[in-house]
Image (tube, rainbow, N blue to C red; front, side, top):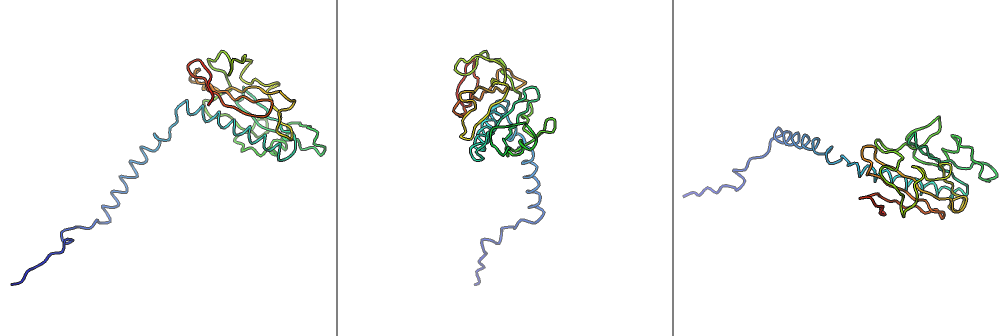
Length: 206
């Protein structure tokens, strides 16, 4: 008497190439639909990202001043939503800044725009320099405008200190679609930066 023993794999069927391609196509379609939704940022996140980028850029400019042992200036243009930096390139290193294209490029910022031929950075879409619905600044500081800096600029000397000493201030950014979404970056006279966010009528450190 013969006994036939079947392999446990005898009833299993392998996947054909067509079936695998169908699965791949379905996966790609689902991914293409869900990925944009996952990547979409909220207005609050857009504002947070802009404030964080401003802090990073100021830190970079300050570091550049120390590394180059030269004075560096950051200039803000609230109307154009634009800012850029200039490095003293004079042989004397006496802080002679004329705000030229060469001086801007020496700042080594990652430019994404230009204004009147000068490279610089433009704020992200829907973000502007502004105070929104805020009535006072962080720590109760009086609001003097979106760019709370003398002559809309701040300079750092070769030690990374604000020049002239103590001439710091605050820069405000807001979301143009929601006046309650406001952020601020304070610049101390020692060259330290701090990000703030306006929530429920009050300022809180980020």
